[in-house]
Image (cartoon, rainbow, N blue to C red; front, side):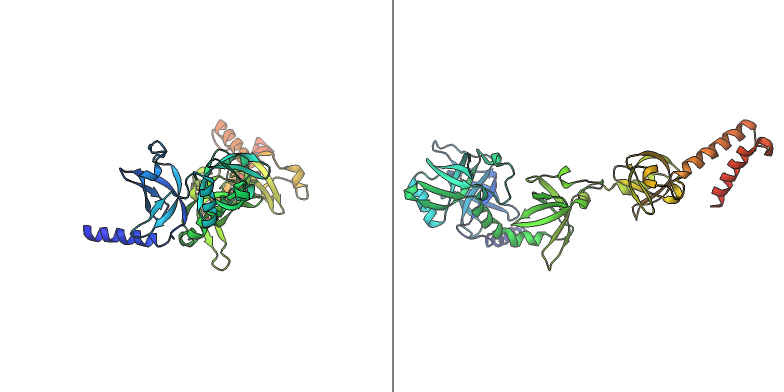
Length: 390
């Protein structure tokens, strides 16, 4: 591709991105570069926008932001790219500007001063405004103190009694941004995609993750880790930023299934090498079933010990003989990596020891033990022969 063609392609891409926005739409972005006259703002996958450096200066003429800082601004132009302005979202200088923002649906910038009953006191210019707790964020605020001291853009939703009663909402602006981004976000949510999101809520069966644009997916507890997880709260908490893999998207219902363990190394790929057949391992009884006992050999690896391999007499109470939490020695019988199954035996431990005693005895005698050594050697030989026939 020629340089002219590359320039045209870049201009075309910028034009398409710009059409996804509307004039007057508030947007959050990150400062990625500051030039003599223009600063560049990263607004996500849609590219970069421009803002006049003069709008980033304080009353003394000094630039009040740095590369990496987040700002809220308004889209003022989408012609040939996206141009932003902080006018209308900067600190209103007077009560009149706050009233104008209310009447014209503009955003104002305010600082969360303190928690009050039912919400927060927000300082907009020299005025006090009230933001209800439910309007400070889209996600439920578990720890209200996290917002105190933060500077946000707010929508003025009530302006009464000549400015004595001002109510603001940050949630309104966030929801507008979500609606604007929803279509694009949905395009990126396909099976196999890796997405960074925020944990919105944690329940007994999993966690809902905010993926952007108001879209949430379910991270089921079974998809959180290769090791056993008792409760999702062990690994995630509301507000956590996590990277997940999209497992399934149900087009009919819109439900999205997510996975976390898929981005971790799968320990089962080395299971055969980790648990060679014939090896004696110490494991822990974790649960019982009608057909056997499950033994945890290591984090993420639970093996089945069939009833016939437990050395427990038929008819005995298996739960009493091998209570949950008991440490026992077992022999690895086989490993099926594809099916993620391991079979172990407690009975084989005793048989291996008997075989070892026979080998030790015969080596000390210089050959096969004579028949006259007694019933113990006969019994051991019988054990060896039966295992060989199996």
